[in-house]
Image (cartoon, rainbow, N blue to C red; front, side, top):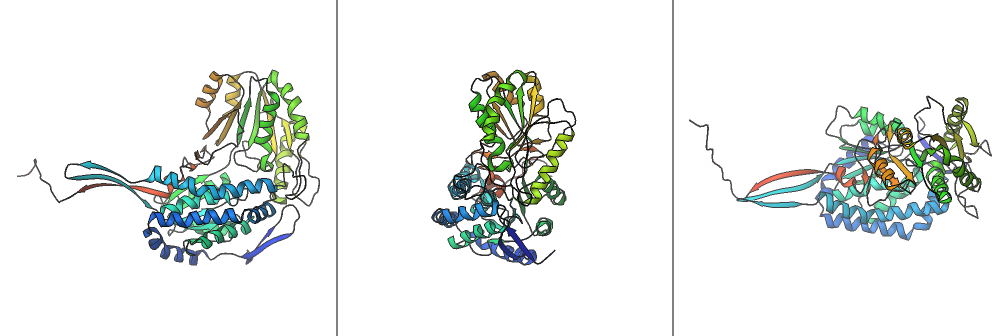
Length: 467
C-alpha cells in the first residue's frame, strides 16, 4: 500500500485529489477522548450546530455539486439533488430523534417509570462512492444528534467529497475530534471495524463488504452494526395500457445514476403477451438516453460509471449473460476503451436457468417474460437480496398480493424501484441488510434505550419467604 491515495475524475481521467492515508489508532484515541464532552452537551446545542451545517451546505450548494459531479461522474443536475438531500437531512433527523428516541416518563406509586436514550459512543461510518455525501451524511447526522462521535472513512474512490463534507461539519462548529476523516482503502476500513474501541459500525456499500463486517463483529454483540447493502431488484410490469409511462418508470429505475444505485432495477419482469408492446415504447426511449460528461450541454441523463475497473467488471458480467444465452435487445457498449462511459443495456434472459444472483452495479437490465402473476412474484423473489421491488400496473388485488408477498424493505406501486423517501425508513432484508433500516429510522441505531424504575424515596418490604 502506498502512502498516498489518488482520486481521478471518471469523465476525464484527470487527477482531482490526492492525500495521505489516515492514522486509525490516533483517530480512535482522539474520538474516545472527545465523546464525553460532546455527549454531555445539551441536545438543543448539538442540533443548533447541525442546523448551521445545513445552512453552510445550502450556501455552498453550487460548488459542492460541482465537486460531486467531477469526482463521481454523475451529471450536474443529479449532483445538485444530492446536495439538497444533504442539507435536508438535518431537519428530518431532528424529527426522527424526537419521535423515536424521545424521553417518556409515566407516573407510578411513589415514583415513576422512565424511558430515555443514550448514545453508543464512537461510530465508524463507512461510505460508498455512488452518493458520497448523502449516504454517509445520513448516518452521521442522526449519530451526532444523539451524542455520538464519528470516524468517517469515505470510499477510496471519492475522498475529495468526503473531505469537503467533514469541512462543513467543522465550519459549523462540530469539534474536530467529534467528526474525523479517515482516508484509506479496505485496510483502514478493516482496522476501524476490528478495533474494540469502536462502539458501532454504520456501513453503506456492497454485500460482499457488509458480510465481511458482520463476520468481524460476530463475537462483539455489544457493537451496534447497521448494514445498508445492495440489491438485485425486480420491477414487474403488469396489466396497464399506460405503456409510455411504464417505459419511463423502467428507465428511471434501471438507468438513473448510470445504474449505480443500490435500489436500481436489475430485473424487469413482464407478462409475456404484454412484453412486445412495452418494448415498442421502451427501446426507443432507451435509444434517446444521452450518455455524457457531467458538465455537457445539454445535460446527459447518464454519466460514466465510477472508474475503468467498474466498467471492466460490468462488461465481464454482461458477457457472461450473453454466454448463457441472453438475447441482446440493446447492447452494453463502451465508446472509449480508456474511459468508463457505458451505454444502457437491455437483454432478454427468458428461459435461461442458473442465472447468477448478483448485483451488476451499472446500466444492465435483464428482461424476463412470464405467463402469470404467480410466476411474476416467484421470479421477483428469486434472489437472496431484498432491498427494493416495484409493481407497475395491475389491479388493486395484484398490488395487495405483491406488497404482502414481496421480500423487500421498499415495495413501490407505479413508481420506480429507486423512489424512496428520506422521511421513511430505508433498508432491506437478506443480502441487502441486517434489518436496521436507515433514513428516518437511523435514530434507532444511533442511541440505545434505557428503562428506569425510579422512586422518590427508598421504600421496600419483603412480604413472604423470610424466617
